[in-house]
Image (cartoon, rainbow, N blue to C red):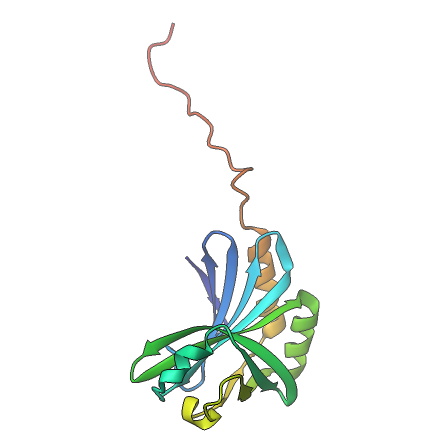
Length: 177
């Protein structure tokens, strides 16, 4: 469920337990999303995901599912796990999970860098990297990230706990005695 849009970031409530904060890619706004996820009752942790669109249609793309990929993020070594591969337009979208981070750490990191630049540098298959990913480097500008993550945190704290939400019986209309 859409919650708001702020400074080019879209906020969503997903499956009644998660706040998703998403920003589209700079080239294709429909197939390359940078996503940060906060979970109800664990709002102090942030999961980071990103989509990578490739125009290649190599059959080994599907074999990347549930495998580790080596990355270079803002110049530093990192890794991720491929959690989804879907056909899209004339190619595929590969969804990569970079893991969970402490709220303050990720907020300070991206507040400093002001961008997310990532390159896939290696994978676990024997297929050459350039036959799977035509453009292995992507970049997102991430303006106002501290404010954005603070808003996501506030939304996360407001996710209701169904055990606490009780529907009371409305008073019954009828004859007065």
